[in-house]
Image (cartoon, rainbow, N blue to C red):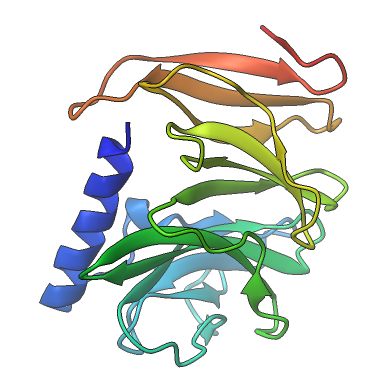
Length: 209
């Protein structure tokens, strides 16, 4: 049930050890709402941090270099609707522990801090903001398999949105512009890529389509 994300984190370890973790699709590039900045992951400063740059590739700025000791990797940046904040996934990579939390940082590099609380071995991933910038929906395996959760941008009020059996992954949520629905992928947790199905969760009725 944790195979795909374990493989993803393992790939990060290999890349860090090789010193060659460049900007790739897995780094999770994200363009700002005003289309004037791109958030992405880079190891230019020696550790996987979230950077911003102009669409032309200039004005590179490190948002998340907080001098954290040991292996970690910041990936999956997601702009808030106003462009004031970037949410991202921080992977903690140690020989005795895997896990990740959601963090956020202001677009000027201030106000860096966690959104979700640390839990050993738990992977929080795929953050996406609500249209009103009040909440974040994400996927997490804290309940044994990957379910969707919603939390306030402040980190308060965690709610589990989906409840599926072990061996099912609910991933890659995206909020509708009116804030009433969330679309996501659901698939079986296997070592190889399995077929996925798109679902829509209506938040006011808790119905799936």
